[in-house]
Length: 348
Image (tube, rainbow, N blue to C red; front, top):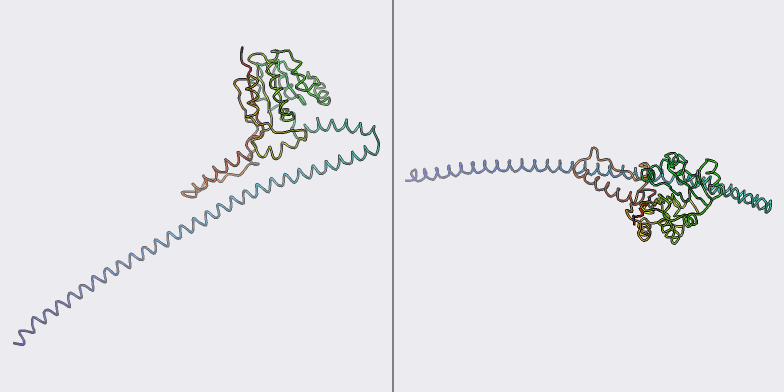
């Protein structure tokens, strides 16, 4: 009986052995697949880490370049400020020398010094800080379409007469007034019609409804608020229906103006906010009030933009957001150097 019993038992062991071999083979296949998958995951992970590291380095370089550009811009600005301060120190030393000489020579020399100082204050100051006469005429050209049909025009505080010369060249009847005898002499030498008067007196003495235009460039910042209101009311009375009032002044919405260039002129009292000036126009009766933003700062004096060329994906989006923030900050810091308000006296 033993041989007959052992045969089935041997067959059972053989089948178990074959099953075990098959199971081991399947296990090895799955193990290999798992290893292959793990290797793919590791390669993908390393690739993603490499991409992230590359983007991080690119972003660091990008931000570093932007910061370097801002620092270079700031260095250039501080360099210009230092040069201006050096020039002011030299001029202060020269004036101090003149003052010491005048005090040493007595009353007659002091009188001569006052006369010389008037010329510096009204003529040399204009040349040095206001700009060349041709540059001023070019700036005023923006008003010609409005003023060519507004004769006669009265220019309050006409200075060197740039607006008068420009209007006369266009055939527009005009005259000017200025409180400075030096400025009046300068204009008369050029054949311009100018009287020595202050703006308020000139308007008060003007026949009502006799003018087509009243203009004043960079004068109201020298006046007290109540005098600005009076000037606007007197201008309204002097203009005929349809006549226009144009007042130009430094722009207080620009930090670079209110914290810097505005105070170059020691006779400036305070900046005039455009909304406050518009309220004066409205109270006086003007309509069609329009604000003109003038003389933007040149690009080389403004905050630098981040170039978008060569950027993609998140880097481009980040740079674009930084540029939008730059635009808001740049408008706040710089923007326009001057503005003008134009108002019309309505009919009736």
